[in-house]
Image 1 (cartoon, rainbow, N blue to C red):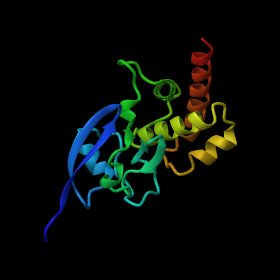
Image 2 (spheres, one colour):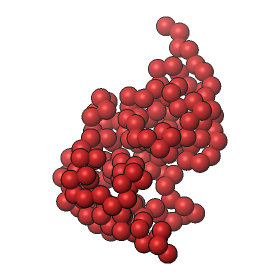
Image 3 (cartoon, one colour):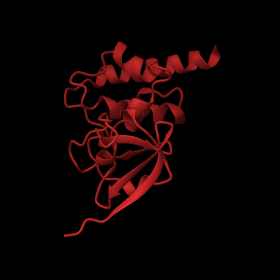
Image 4 (cartoon, rainbow, N blue to C red):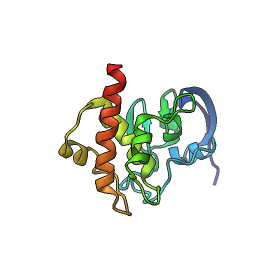
Length: 162
């Protein structure tokens, strides 16, 4: 069997990059080439959210999205949220709220929270639950995740007001 490869160019966490990929490779496999391991394959079916990345600001399942589909796009991973070594307010809120136990699902929840807050800066509990319903936490840190989203929302509003 012959594996066909191609070169793609895209922005990864704000930096222009290029990669040689196999036509069969998914985004998680692509990110591994850049030593980024925040997005991880867990279920392999796009059902758990562990592989979430943002492509042009929209959350996608990295285990289902072919790497070729990010050619010419902007890809943001959890590793790309910090600014000049400072954690993003969402990341900080997850830490302060204890919104993780094993941490396996946390990158996906953080990126989904970013997309949620970008669209709805002050979500209520129902909006949060609905928006994050595609992400699963096997350790059941859901109450803490809810707190973290509210805290991140408050922090973002405070930063804008300042």
